[in-house]
Image 1 (cartoon, rainbow, N blue to C red):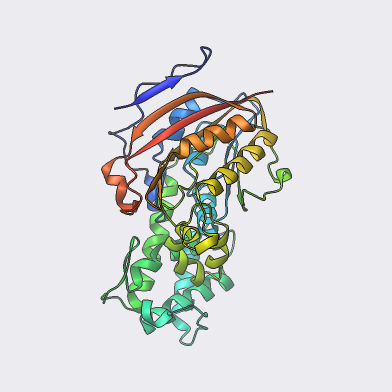
Image 2 (tube, rainbow, N blue to C red):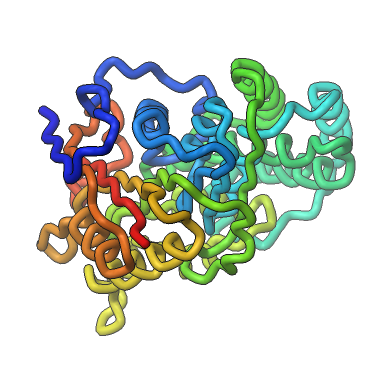
Length: 377
C-alpha cells in the first residue's frame, strides 16, 4: 500500500502508486551488474511530476549505474551525474554515450592480440590465487593489456566495462552477492568467450535506447567535497537515491573489478557514504549522526547549484545500526529544512521481493520513502 502526503496546493498531482509491481526489466541493466539499482519507473515518474523548466538540468549526486540520467536523456533534459565509484561512473558513461564506431571489430582484434600474449603482466591483487585460477588470471591480464594498448575511436571504456562485467563470473566467487570461494568449471577460454559475448550484449542494449535527446555529464568525485564549479549547468531537479548507512557496500561489490582495471577499491571504500565497514571501527565507528552530517553537506551543495523553486527528490530506505532502526528519510528531510528546503511530498513504497537480493539480513529493508523537497529563496 502507498502512503502519500502533500504539502502545498500548487504541485501537479502525481499518478497513483509508487510500487510499480508491473515494472519491466530495463534492457540497459544488462550492461553490467550493479546492486540496488533504481527501477526506471521511479525517476521517470519524478521527472514527469516535477519537470525542470526549459534550460535547466537534472542532477543525480549518487548516480550509480545512471538510471536517472538515462530517463532525463530520454525526456530531452540535460543531466549531470556524480559518483565516487569509478565502476559506477564507467557504467553511466557507456550507458549514455554513442556506440563507438567499429567497436565489435576492435573487440575481435583485442581478443586476438590477448590470446597471443602468453606472458602478460599480472597485477598485485590481494589473494589473487584464492579467487582466480592461474589460467583465468593470465587471460584477464592479457585482455586488460590488449584493451589498454589497442583500443581506438573511443572503444576503450566500453571494452573495459565489458571485461569488468564478467570478472565475478570467471572468478572462484560463488556470486556477486555471496563471498564464498567455490570450485567453478572456468578456464581461459571462458574468459575470452564471455568477454566477446559481453561486448555484443552491451552494444545490443545500447541499440535499444531511444534517440539521444540531451547532453549528459558524468563526474567521478566525492559529492561531499566536489567543487561546485564542476556543476556547469543550473539545476532545476535532483533525482537520487543515496546509499543507506550500514546497508550495503558498493565498493566491496566491485572490489576485484576495480583491482583488475588498475583502480583503487580501498580509496573508494574510505569515501563511500554508508559503507558497512565504517560502522565497525570501535570508538571511531560511524553513527546516524554521521549520516546526518553527510546529508546536510549534500543538501548544502544542492542549495548552491539549484535554482529557487527547484525540486530535490530522494528515494531512501531505513537502516539498522547496532540494533536501532534509523529513519533516513527523516534525517534527509531535517537536513533539507536546515539548508533552505521545504518538504512538499512524501510517499512510502514497497520494494519488490525480486529486488531484495542485495538486502543483507541485518538491513531488512522492505520499504523506502520517496521524499520531495523544494528549494526556497
